[in-house]
Length: 491
Image (cartoon, rainbow, N blue to C red; front, side, top):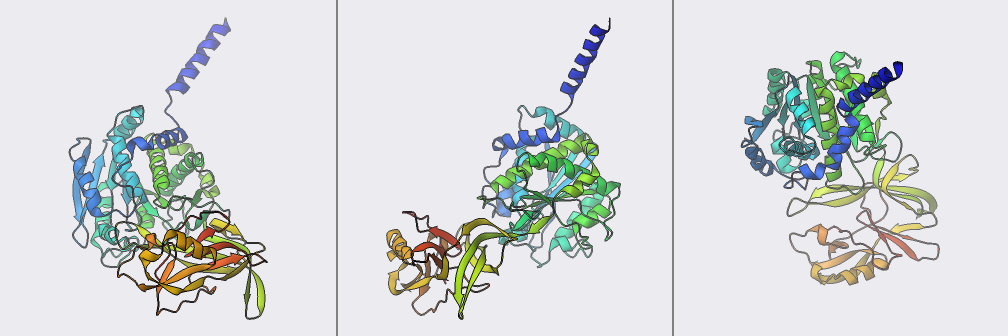
């Protein structure tokens, strides 16, 4: 008599499991897999401007799903928009690009707009979000900083250090929105240096989370606890997509910062810092991770699913540590002042605006010399058995850069020349087009190994055969027939 009843219970249990909403991990995976369907195609390079997003925001006005308004203006009178979607009782506010040179989450935000207005297999998730949550988006809080691709606003003020004095119109707007909307959750969306690792290992901290402290004691009340538990769920979801690339930002209290204060004012703040990932200079992969991560968090918030995660797991997320360099040369011999030493060399490839367009070029420098065994590089060269010497300057000037043909550049490179002289240097040169460094005939250049100096070297074996050339911090492998040429510099 019990067997049929047992079967019915099992069937009911199975149907109950089937009816349950997907987990945060499932939502993140689905969002990640289908991101190409929602990506905003006009934002493919991270140095976009305010003028690039205004038409997109105005277009949203045509869709009744969104309420779009100009909420305020920047110092230089650029409009700052507020976009509303959904009608749920739980309010969530998301703001991006408080720092003008931190645009990754802004791109993901526009992907979220596209996601919300499409119709496909993820309709149940859309419906859940729009019915249970009211979303408020502030894309590009600092449009003046974005115009110059710099951190500060037009008053030279860091908006994230203006939460108390409120001297910037952008800061006053964010405070006003927080106070008037009074959201339960807030997403503070930033970019961080690509030189952070997740813990002490070699993997970049591609995404770092934080539930900011609201006092020096780092007290955990119910407001901060909600953010911490949500982050645990987001971390679990991301680990399946980028295992080992998730870290926790420093919990140190910053009394002037918006995240810390908004947490104090009663909104559960989740900080997302977009770091680095190998071979992702425009941060398009990280944009995809932002999209998936934020959707997984909104899913948790929409059904209070964050409460199922253990608070202690928040503290198990590894701290982000600044342990990365763009290039590390390991175990190379170097001779100076009568001393023959074994060194590691760390190189940073700093970005500078290109003369034309929205791109950038690199100006590399030597950032560390000595024992770098506790550090890591996006690119590493085991230089055991090799000797480092300064790159050579070719002393027969070229009339113009046009005379520096690719075949000639490769020939010079194979002989240890990293720099050439040019008689007629044009006023504007795009370094992306330079296979080697160039200097005028009157310029004296020293490529010796020096901290903060340029990174132009040759590495040769004990017999004097050249193995590698380092030009402006980029590695040319001279053992292959056609080394890939990176750009040089005008020195």
